[in-house]
Amino acid sequence: MFKVTPNGENRIDIELSGKLDSDEMRTALDDLVDKSDTIENGKMLYDVIDFHMPSLSAIAIEFSRLPEMFGLIRKFSKAAVLSDKTWIKKVSELEGVLIPGLEIKAFSREQKEEAENWLEAAENS
Image (cartoon, rainbow, N blue to C red; front, side, top):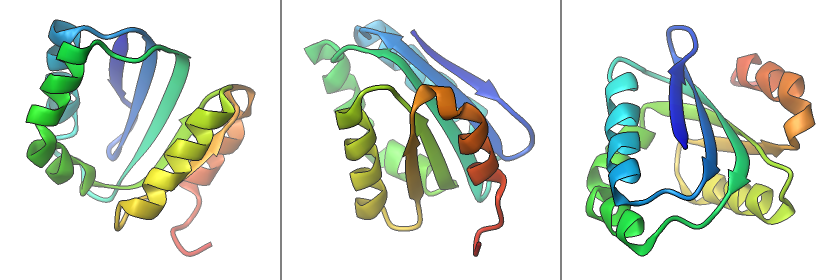
């Protein structure tokens, strides 16, 4: 499951659990693009509930849309990732280092309130 929920004017919340196939990936990316259309300097709360590697066909769909995804990611300045898996948290924060203009901070799933507070904190604090 990949669920995208708008949360205010410039924030979206994403829940990820299970394994995505190509149809689910296509639908998820369409939903993400659609719900991010009007966002500027946005924030994202990404809750990784139960991660499984997507199918190869789902990964192919994602790669085929990379240019569109790079444009989408520029709409966001901060992303908080909730996960109980240490490796997911480390990879998420590494992505934040590699993606200019996007600050990513990882939290354990029970730290949702802290993650939301961090997202809402002023940019220069």
